[in-house]
Length: 244
Figure (spheres, rainbow, N blue to C red):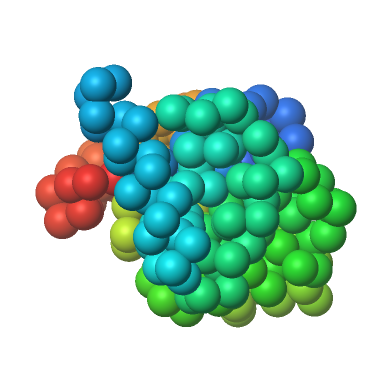
């Protein structure tokens, strides 16, 4: 075993923990948080109260999109006093109505024990509902859960499948996890070029742990393979959804 590869293995566990959000903040690891997912930009202040009332009325009529937006306002304290209990109530209604981003937020709240009891099993249930609707953040979270065996039985095939979907959707967190799997050959054949490609994509998305892993991994590779990975990453980045 080469020295760079040994170093990568040493880095793998703390990187996995960091990507899971147990060391640096999720934002540092390129992973979204419930707060980051809460709401799109709000209207100007002079229109905000009317927008809030309109959103509240639509939510009370049973519109899941409005319910999710109203929940976000209560969660963030935008146009109304912050109220986590009320936010959870509306997030839950929206999630039960099939609104994917609310399902993802409920999964995060269950994972973090914020406003609801900590429940990794229920978190996985919410993530799967949203992931099956194509929510990239939920796909990344579900893949991580299968990789770690957190709230679901550990299953590297499922982890690879969901992380791949999220990575293709532009999730830096999923790209980092998937790069780690290819780097150490866990659940997939070891492929350092594919690992570097994914880690470079994750690094470009702000995933600092992936950047560290890339620096270690490239030290043990021929320059031609590193250049191949850089080219593949550049090509993949051009194909990624521009919104992420």
